[in-house]
Image: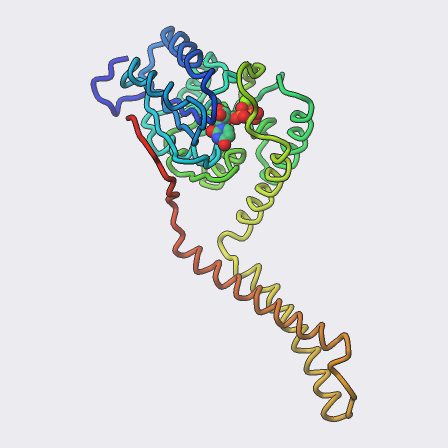
Length: 320
Ligand code: UDP
Ligand code: MG
């Protein structure tokens, strides 16, 4: 409430949006109504993820009306929800950072209990759980599958990894960088950074009132690919050479043995036309693939050393 010093901030709400023009006014109205019941110093950070509708104009209106309460950042193009969150996290100064969707599916009534779970119960991260979902069955069934796999891989006991409504200690969001569709796996990334106290809260979920869902059937494939790369990166992040190098050496060894055998047969036993034998091609192929695997491991090590943590999004405009 008493925002004398700008760094005194209890809650930063981070809201990514992509073509949500109808929802923005009602959303801010709803948030301010709910928050007026509490005494929090808070800010709402909107990240416009390259919307092609009038979302940005509406954000400018909201900024003009509410001043310091609202911060708005606009990407020049659509980078995806994770990039939008990442950008919002960079700006967020609140002790607790709460993310929510812009489409009115998440209720601001959850902000207060989420804040308390972080500050009073000491959680590093609390994920919402849309126990009773208002989404089509084409979404809910794949989602159940995802969550089951994610639980197995990550050993984090969450029911709903993908819930847009999540609360974090400020340190957590500053330590994690997400891109692509990685927003689904924030709890996993947090755990890897050493933030082990991860909780869950059943949250209210509502049907979408305006606009359409931005994630189609594609989410199925991309979600699983992300999980795969997550698993892979998690396992081999420290030492990619151990993985690629081992495979490469095995492959090269097979190639060398095959070719030495053929050479010996040719030179000492006069074997005719070795270039027609399947083993010859097998030897060449495994040699080439092995070298490539080996180089992949080597390059990964180099990249690992000089990894650039910052993502460069093309930010068009900032209203802070
Ligand atoms: N979103 C975004 N960039 C994108 C896709 C979505 O910022 O490329 C935002 C979207 O505007 C919404 C939130 O992410 O605020 C969740 O998207 P959506 O409601 O479409 O997902 P669903 O609820 O269907 O899982
Ligand atoms: Mg939604």
